Image (cartoon, rainbow, N blue to C red; front, side, top):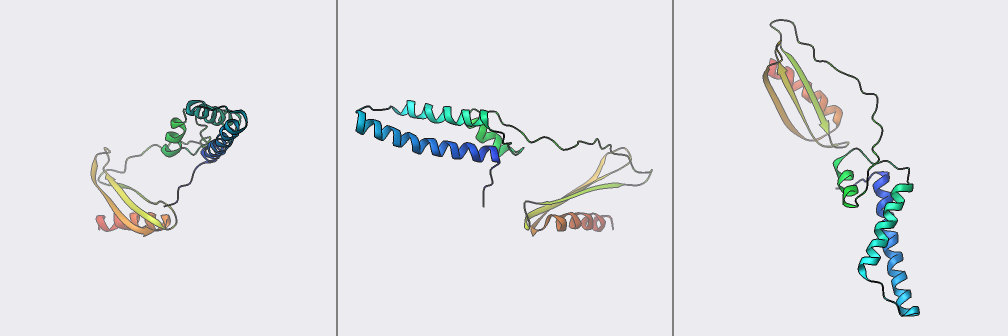
Length: 157
């Protein structure tokens, strides 16, 4: 499985790696040419400070996901979430008397990838009359959506 980092996390990881390499080179040269030794805490502090400065100067955004948030928290940094798209309020409207309404959804992690679908059946008073969730294996997201609608029709039939 390939891990994809946001721009903010990717830049901070690159900064940390570059500063670690530079710190090793610096400590090595100070020891050889000046006879000075740098302790581990000072080198670690240097890396932490550089990553913090890179985060403060950067214009990159994190993905709005838990993975990025946990990495940034590990570095004790604040994330810059992506601006939310326009948020629209959607209000569920009940079906006509003696009708049942079904809400379905299907998804896949990428194209194609492991996916699943599900649905919820509700009556006029919004009580759940039934539901389903089905793992689908390797599918495209569009296929998962269509399969969710198809399964809802099959259950009703």
